[in-house]
Image 1 (cartoon, rainbow, N blue to C red):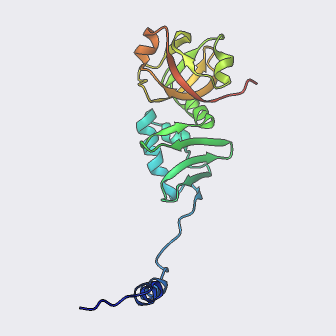
Image 2: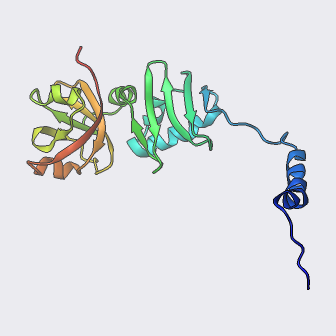
Image 3: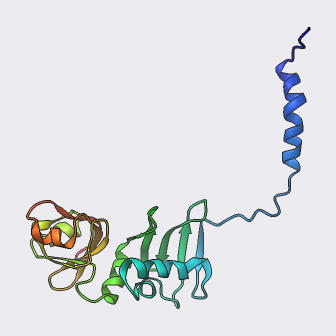
Length: 198
């Protein structure tokens, strides 16, 4: 039996050129490109109702409307696959959308929740001693916490508030509310974004 030998050029002509011709001939008319950033209005476009539902689940009833008011013009930034990545208002970033399906707060989103949620919900209260460090985005240590909302669990997004009631930062709880109040050492909140002193 004799074997026929092919050169690389012969192989390309025989096998690859027909495939390339078929692929190039395919129509892409049915493929709709997905924008990386799009405006979201109050008419339910761009998935805002779903994002409001997630916010209500994560922070409690009313949080969705507080973060994403139906009357406000917002922008949703998306990944290349179309998953929501961030929501922005004219005043700044409200939230980022984590791969775990929960929001991480931007300072502007924290301000909105601070105005909407009753004290002490999702708040970690600190004193004068730690205020400048927290504003400078240093972590909150348990021994400096005066009060923590009962519902706080590790991994929750929280508002770091001065004892006079002013929002000074947002971050992620590293301990539960009970542990924050019981421990004298350790990080209570990993600070993400601090509010500059006025």
